[in-house]
Length: 110
Image (cartoon, rainbow, N blue to C red; front, top):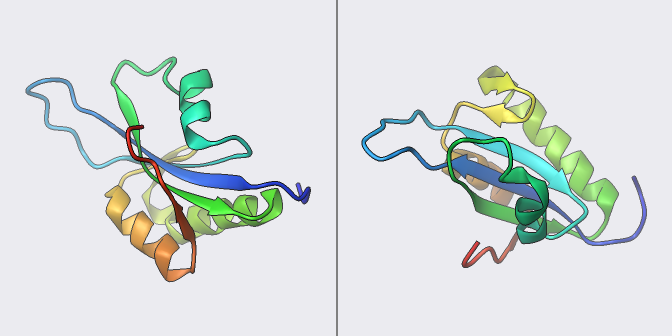
């Protein structure tokens, strides 16, 4: 951690199958690579549903992004299901990040 390079925290959501009612799930993750690259590299594999980046936040250093991800995991731990998946709406997490002063990263067309 700690090198001087832009890094990201992203929020990923699953898209329901047609006709399926899906609970609110959000993955709170960290990456040194841009969110689109991360999605295309390996996040889309192994999930039967389509997933998309709902929001992403840009940090000046890897250390800042890593700490922000860990702080979010701590803040929402009561909603933790497994690894980095939490059962709550991504907008709630996005608003928390914004309240912490996080800088939104443009995820248009992701």
